[in-house]
Structures are given as structure tokens and as C-alpha cells.
Image (cartoon, rainbow, N blue to C red; front, top):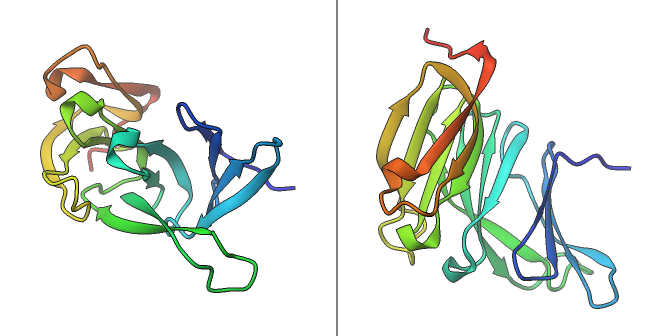
Amino acid sequence: MERYRLVKNVEKSKMMKVVRNINPAKVWDQDEQGNWYMTGSWKAHSGSVWKVTWAHPEFGQVVATCSFDRTACVWEEIVGEGAVPGEEGLRHWVRRTNLVDSRTSVTDVKFGPKSMGLLVATCSADGIVRIYEAPDIMNLAQWTLQHEMTLKLSCSCLSWNPSFNSWLRSVRAYFDPVTPANTT
């Protein structure tokens, strides 16, 4: 029996996406009869995957993952022919970018509200929150670091407040009260 770290439901759909805490990441969908079947599997990172987040459907099937390996990645789903017999219809997830600014484990990743465009925020164990923007939503390989905030504590969770217009005021970081940020 496999153990899963994170289970996410995709809004307004019957799909359920699952990412294991050990590579490879896996995606499962539910058919009309309630049966689950794997539609994607890929090696997401060189370390454990901590979190996964889905962009608003307006931006397509786009996910971001973060990992112990100090990176966050943005992935896009491509439906294609299976290379191996029995894998027809298996969806392939293509890494569009690898965000490598962190010097410690990236502990959370979240896409911003669709009203702000295609933004993704990351936080890391060293207490740094970074906000990236995709200036062209048709080219997910290009992400620009828009803002970097250094906090005094290790950050473990992020959340966006969709009621603010300014992205700088709308991201919140949650801290691990026991773990000080590594400042060395």
C-alpha cells in the first residue's frame, strides 16, 4: 500500500490529483462509475515533494510543486500517445520552469488569484517569501521574480488574500514558531 503526503481536489471537476511525498508524482482521475485510474506519473524533483498547487483553470492544466531539493517547478499537462503499451491516454507533465532561487527547502508554493494574473508565491525554510510572475501566459518557461521578502522565522505555509488588488499585500506567510530561520 502506498502512502501519500498530499491529496488535492481540482475545483469544479471530478478529477482528483495526488502527489506522493516520494518521487514519482502521480495524478489520478475518477471516472463516471467512481473508479480511480492513474493518468500521469513523473519524477518531479530530486527530493521529497512537499506541496502542490493548481493554477486557475483559465490558465490551463498547470501545477506547481515545491521540494526539499530547494526548488519549485511549474508543470503543464500534455495529453498524448503512450510510449509503452497500455499507457494510451496517459497524460504527460512537462516541466516548464524550475525556480532555483532558494538556498533551503522550499516548504510551500501557491498560485495567486486569477484576477492578479499568473503569479506564484514560494516560501522556504530560511524564511524567504518570493513572488514570481509569468508575463506571458502562453510561455510558461519565463517567470520573473517580482518580490522577495525576508522574514525572521522559518516559513512553512502561504496563503493569498483574493480581496486585495495589490499582490504585495495579499500574500501571507505562516511561520513555524519553534524553528528560527537559518541566517547563516
